[in-house]
Structures are given as structure tokens and as C-alpha cells.
Image (cartoon, rainbow over all chains, first blue to last red; front, side):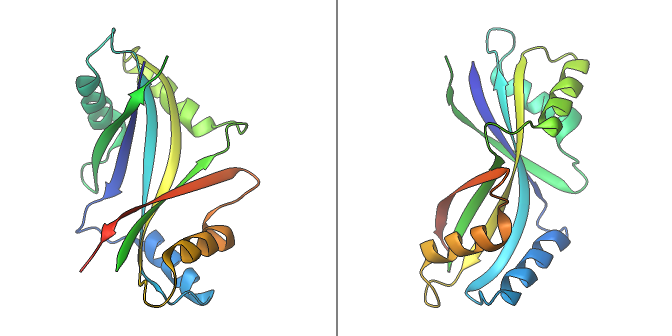
Length: 83
Length: 83
């Protein structure tokens, strides 16, 4: 088994109101050392490489399900094999 | 400026219904190579290290705001310095 982490973030051109809200809350707590906050999500996906090529699988499930390409972009990294 | 990524995940003992729902949706699309899915979120935080020690800042904002320690845990990594 292969453990893959897929990161989904807003595109640079998309306004991130959740990140701005969190930044404001952090400032309200007195942390003026924080200059910016952006929010994203990730999916830790365990893939059986004997059933499908890992890169192909990640590309397909990202494009079909996980990522809204109007607003979001993604990248992934292989975290390592599992027993 | 220092760019830090803070990862927030459910604790191992906490049921992740969103991950299970996504796994089921992936299977419904025919991807039976996917064995498991877990969901998490991350925060890309830009910190001014001249105003506060980065490790202290991350610990404080995580504990005060970003992480619900009843259900979640966190880790972070420094992605690098920014100009």
C-alpha cells in the first residue's frame, strides 16, 4: 500500500475569506507577529499499487471528485509505503 | 518572514465520517484501488520572527484557536523563509 497526501488549496487569484477571518481572530488574540493566513485541506489516501498506477489514480480521483478546478488547485506527495 | 504550515487532523480514536463518505464516493466512481481516506486541514501562516519566536507563536495560536484538543491533534513544518 502507498500513502499519498493530496493538498487542495484555493488558486492564488481566489479570495480566501476563511483565511482572512482566522487572521483577524489571531490578531484579536494579540498575535500581531502573524502577517497572513491561508487555509487548505488535505486528503490522506491509501492506494493499492497492484490495482492501479498511483500517479494515475491520484490524478483521476482529484479531477473527478476532490478538486473544484474553477476555484482550487492541488498537488500531492507520496508519504511512503505501508505494510 | 517565515512560512509555517500547521496540519490539523482528527485523533486516531476519533471517527472521521467525512473521510468515509469520500472513500465511498471514490469507490462509487470505480476506484477500488483506494483502501482508505482521511481528511485534514492545514493553515499556511506567515510569521514575523522579529516580533515573536516562531515555535512559540505556532504553539500559542494552535492551542488558543486552531486546534480542538478534544478531537484533534496538530503538527507543523517550516516551509521556508520569505523575502
